[in-house]
Length: 336
Image (tube, rainbow, N blue to C red):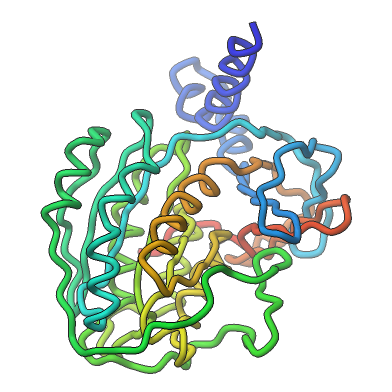
């Protein structure tokens, strides 16, 4: 009986999110369709100060603000969503990092279930789709097993393993600046173009799914990118895509993970650091578990300044001593 109730709750959430497309066939008034289509959905991850996921919060534990104005939470759910994921792997890591990622790569498949769909993309100068979306985990596992990661040069890959505390996704680590675009360049690694391409792949996936980019990189970013960081974040926010990053290699010592942190923080994802193969394998599981098990808040904006394209979001939780990740804002339209 309990599992039936959970199933009905999940179906209610999905139906609510898909309401505009369902309502069109039922002859509802255009005004109602427009009202529902403006629903802003905000996935929220909440952790304690040890990094453990919190799952026992309720609607009344949250407050949400848009452009400083408190909003009424119209929808709340703690039910897990199926994932649509693009696993995006850098193809020009240092020799040591490439070896560690190569050995751990097949472990990614264990984080995905039969309701999920996942694609695999590699990038260096250009992004390349290795496997299009599939729900066949055996096919995904086989492709991971066949994938070979190129390497460039030896590097010292020692460093921290996990992310530090954050408030609404912002890093509170001492010595980690509020993230800027001054990431050192590696001439061939067009990270921004790759993230944009992965966002384009996810843009058309269903709103009833949690859409994520699962990025493994050393954080270096070429100056030859065709897309800008701002345009890429615009796309990700407009398409409800969250970025989860695992930094490895020289990013750990040379602070080249700023751009990775920026994408994670802006989109309500998360960022981690790995220095060993065992760390990578553990974090792969953490990423999919965290992305799947989020609270879902939704609201219809009130007192909104319609002249603005971008709107700030702030989520607060009433229970003390908790850290939360949620996207910092949204765009009202997908960029051309």
